[in-house]
Image 1 (cartoon, rainbow, N blue to C red):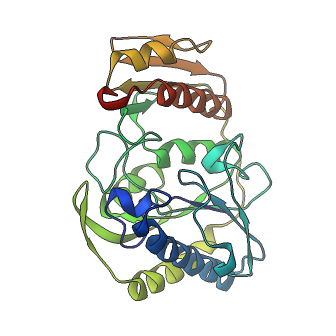
Image 2 (cartoon, rainbow, N blue to C red; image 1 turned 135 degrees about the horizontal axis):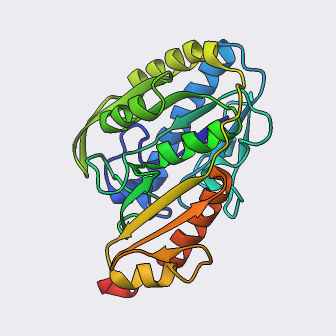
Length: 272
């Protein structure tokens, strides 16, 4: 399975590169699809017989289906129970985090966690958590190993901690949140295919890791914490923070998804 986000795709450095409807987004959809195809090719070369690609960015309707490698299937569209990780519970033998990025409050190209700016920090069981860490913990609950993580160099540094056994491919070097030294698609495609082929050696479900978890979320404004705290089990723990416990990571991510949706809806124009 490939969980495909866009901020960490080849060449992406700017807001318009990933915002649906812009001219730049139309351009980078092709590069994004190229990254996905490079990984599909590598997974197939490594022995994969079925590859499910789950669109995981914004509207989750960014990849070009007509250009997708025919050896894969694509899950596209929003309102999926497990969001970026929909399909992880279907018996897959491994997951690739493609086009991922650093978490909220961290250095990295277009760094954020779920919301572009409103969330300034997330911790999972007391540890700063990017989308990658959250999703890797969810994958572990189903016994699914993270095989490969791609994005900028900061993303790979993060992945070295939460998925040390995975392959890590940096397609660009972060200079700032909106600038990077980028490799051309011909090079990133080759790197992604090679890594995907090699990482298939680790494919295969292991023992599920199921346990209770605690998530804390810090927002950039007090009213977002107040709005999120209306969710049952979620408590406002500070002026701009909320926290909650969940018996499993699956339940934790469902609650987190609700928290982010409510906070996003509470943003008010220029002042946020």
